[in-house]
Amino acid sequence: KFSHKVTLVPRGVDITKFRPGVTPALQFRKRLSISDKTIVVGTVSHLVAVKGHPVLLHALVNQPTVHLLIAGKPLDQEYVASLHELAASLGLQERVHFIGGIKEVPAFLAEIDLFVLPTWGRGRMEGCPVALLEAMACGKACIATDIPGSRDVIENGKSGILVPPENPEALAAAMQTLIDSPDMRRSLGEGARRRILDRFTIDHEVAAHVAVYEEILGR
Image 1 (cartoon, helix red, strand yellow):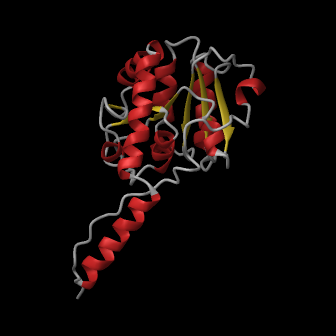
Image 2: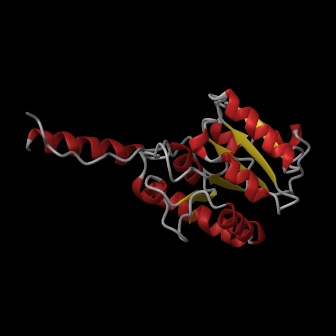
């Protein structure tokens, strides 16, 4: 019976594709009439309940000039309809934009000022959140909930900000801090890129797989 304990391998990011300075070729700001001076928050994930989008919508209420771009495949139509209804009931329908699934994620990330991953702390847990890794590789200031997966990626205060899950007030406070401080956004974005280069590149993933195989084979 095989019972060998194997260490989980962290995901790697293509740092040549996901990098700072990518051209914002999708031109969402232009298409949605959002000025270059307006703060834009972005999130990328499948549109399913565990991803915690309602928390992000509630956090946006007291930031009247901020726009939110929500990208992701609408896998749960009932959930998507509830998000549209919630945005309308909160008076956010002019500032919350549902982009749908996108293939050119680096171009999408090039148009936002900060990235948020508001995953629940209950239900299905994140593994290694690829969207967060990609945003960090692009040098974006990132906020994520303090759960396994995101906690393994972000060093709180150095390469991003972790907030308690399902807490719109804490998320709103973290967002406001970054909205108010371009220097902090820049510093966290630089720290995020360094974190990816140090731990989460494709080369790191390959090396980790090799180490696991060698461990299994008893080398």
